[in-house]
Length: 99
Ligand SMILES: [Zn+2]
Image 1: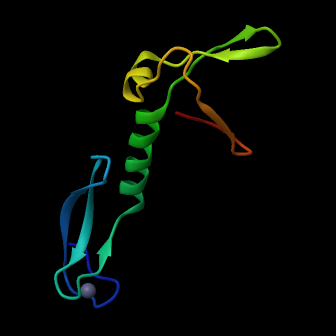
Image 2 (image 1 turned 90 degrees about the vertical axis):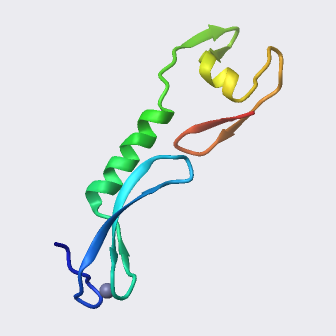
């Protein structure tokens, strides 16, 4: 049984979902209502997000630039069309492709 760090009373384990539908479990104090998510659960949720959003693609030379091939699932999801303009945002450590 897990005890509350705030009041020392018993905590119950509950299940919840992130807005994106990823399930996780957390503890809620039956007395004061304090809520705690374990590091293990946080890592598990983070890993699920990484798996959900990871696509490895190869760049191809296109004139003096490099072309990026966008996987079909993402083309469908974001309703991308041939010749459509999209925006590349330089975030410093990564590039965001924004429809
Ligand atoms: Zn408590």
